[in-house]
Amino acid sequence: MSLTTKLLYRGFHVLPFCVSGIANIAYQENKFINSDILTYLCSEADLRETGDGGDGMNALALGLLAALCWGVHDLAVRYVSQSVSVIASLMAVLISGAVLQFSLVATLGAFDPISGTAMISAVAAGGCYLLAGISMYAAFQRGPVRLVAPLVASYPVLSVSLAIWRGASVSPLHWLAIIAIGVGVSVVAAKSERDATSYPDAGPTAVLSLLAAAGFAAAFALGQYATELSDEYSVALLSRLTAILALGLIALASRRSIWPGSQALPLLCVMGILDAIAILSVIAAGGLPNAQYASVAASVFGLLTVVLAWAVLREKMVVRQWLGCFVAFAGIGYLAL
Image (cartoon, rainbow, N blue to C red; front, side, top):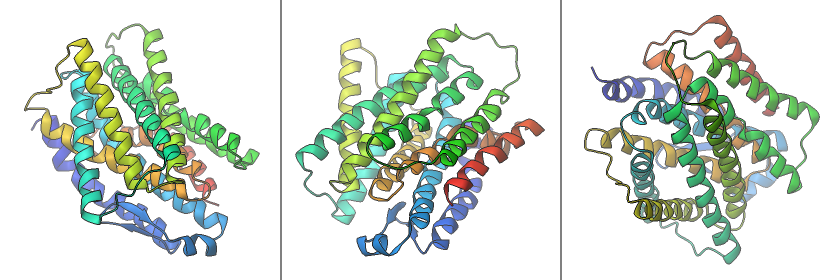
């Protein structure tokens, strides 16, 4: 059985249980994660009646859904990047995600006019997200995962810093929780591979990983700001279309093919759908108080990639890795208080 088949066959046996758990978190706070559109629905009246703790939990639930989707996505990136170019892989992922988002907008009739400020923010978010995607794919292509994952996962610190700059209040204990998440992710990712494989020079790989972290932080901050001014469906779709256009221009200028090949295309389409759900979840949290916690919770995608590799691909997990999982999820739990 090929790795692609394993991901599609075994992965979808694991996902329902994970999604069920995340939906239960939101249900406990009298909120809903709509299984039909996989996004968060909350009226302004509900927001006025709910305390800060409940709103923080709702943002975390969206972040955890994003982490789950990106965890599966990155599990596939580790395989696809070895045989398909970065530009071709990203183009397939972006286009398939855009098809999903456009279908939601068309079905729900949710495409609303976007104000000038929101449009600028959404376009900028798309550019930053493309920068993050190219950098992350290239970094994973170089490897190793134990170097790339912790550096990419460091973006929550930048996300919370931007939230503070915009006036959000974050206590020292919340900073400790964020640090705990970063430490937990680092412990798991750093010990996820034990082989003697030779890798390219670590310097450029580290730079690419940090560029990805900065790109994700900026994309999430800009996207969430745009949703405060306009509809999240329109913002997410405009951001993705911007990334597609920019990537197309890069491919044209560099004379690179955007066709990934028929063998990799099905898996890349699944990856695109997961990526679209994830980014929409994080952007949709922009209308909630403590929206920065969605970005923080989403940062565990690196940790979940390792856990899913253990569950789906039967990779071994040592005691230290499970301890890292506990520390990271303990930090997430505190943010929900």
